[in-house]
Length: 225
Ligand SMILES: C[S@@+](CC[C@H](N)C(=O)[O-])C[C@H]1O[C@@H](n2cnc3c(N)ncnc32)[C@H](O)[C@@H]1O
Image 1 (cartoon, rainbow, N blue to C red):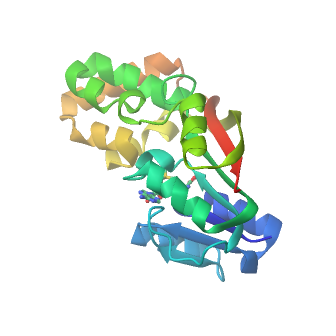
Image 2 (cartoon, protein in one colour; image 1 turned 120 degrees about the vertical axis):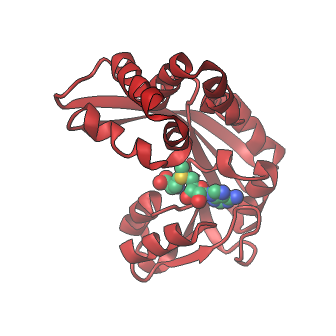
Image 3 (cartoon, rainbow, N blue to C red; image 1 turned 90 degrees about the horizontal axis):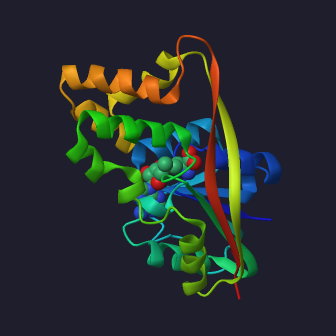
């Protein structure tokens, strides 16, 4: 079985595919040069190309499964991206994705944006991923799959858990500007950043002890006709 990871980033899903299918049967694609470089370094021997979902440099029907994890909302044109994923997958193969449940039970981000709305209500309301991300419900995602012509579309929730050593462990990457939440955090002046940090900690109800958070993603899969 050959599989493609679209929007592979530094290779979280690519690594899981390599474990199951072997290096020679897995490819990755991402428009970010640094991410593709990181993915190649993590998984030597895997073909990782710089490309968007909307324009994949692979032959038609080259893969048995084409997947993307937490990427649909970052595509410039999700309809075109999903059609292109379908185009590089053989008839009978699978096209599947997942997106965070930004508006609901993606706890880390929901608590972040609720805290941000307290500190800078107008800007946070405009940047909240529950508002900005167009595809964060299972039914909308399933409709996107159907409109791309995929068959036997199935969808449902995925629940994941992550452990943190302390609130600081969770907070520390945010001021560096990583992801939309980090970019928002970085854009604040020092006083507001401190206020956000306090509000976020309060919303999560965590402190200096280790804790776990759960996060829900919506998953969708369809079969290529
Ligand atoms: C939230 S990250 C997910 C990365 C990886 N799939 C993972 O699960 O860790 C979103 C990824 O989408 C990539 N991306 C942005 N625009 C894209 C596009 N048009 N087509 C494919 N990937 C894109 C980004 O470079 C980034 O690596």
